[in-house]
Length: 171
Ligand SMILES: CC(C)(COP(=O)(O)OP(=O)(O)OC[C@H]1O[C@@H](n2cnc3c(N)ncnc32)[C@H](O)[C@@H]1OP(=O)(O)O)[C@@H](O)C(=O)NCCC(=O)NCCS
Image 1: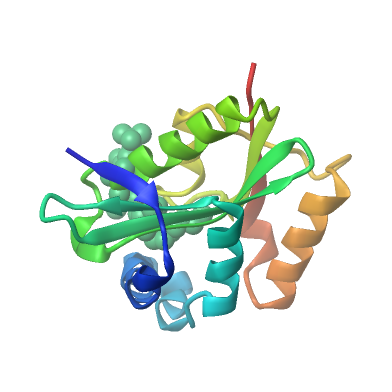
Image 2 (image 1 turned 90 degrees about the vertical axis):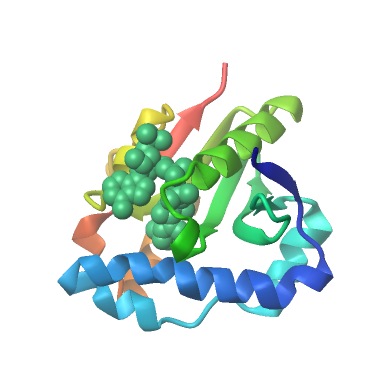
């Protein structure tokens, strides 16, 4: 059974190692393989999420951290900044469990939605979120917050045409 709990300072090295390992998934997609060489999120950023109480880890059967989700409240939304599962543990339900935990957290806080940005056509990105109920937001009329995240990503080399913002409305 997957255990989800809040992350803490002691997990920092593990979180950064998980993110680097997770990115190995992109080696399957030649034009995105370069993402496997990227730097993981800074310790400073992880600490911000920890302070907010919106970063969770998934533990494997042996009790080791094997995945994490980092989020941040943004107005009435909970924005998902990162979701990573160690490469050796992918496809075993940890990513879905982390996302369902974040959705439960947002519901309990009576937030109105969850948002994220992702790759439109990578099988474990937008299609996975769509199965959880997220919808791709049209670029026209997109709220400034999400449009500027997409712009920042493009400025950092992510292929803009393949990226999208998604939203899960909570009712
Ligand atoms: C995205 C990620 C966190 C999902 O975690 P996971 O533990 O592998 O996911 P799960 O086992 O819970 O599976 C989630 C869904 O993705 C699908 N999926 C996972 N790996 C897949 C793969 N290699 N190919 C196709 N689909 C895949 C599963 O079929 C599953 O779909 P379902 O739950 O609707 O049936 C993980 O693949 C990862 O770390 N990827 C690299 C980093 C990344 O892309 N992060 C997200 C950035 S937006």
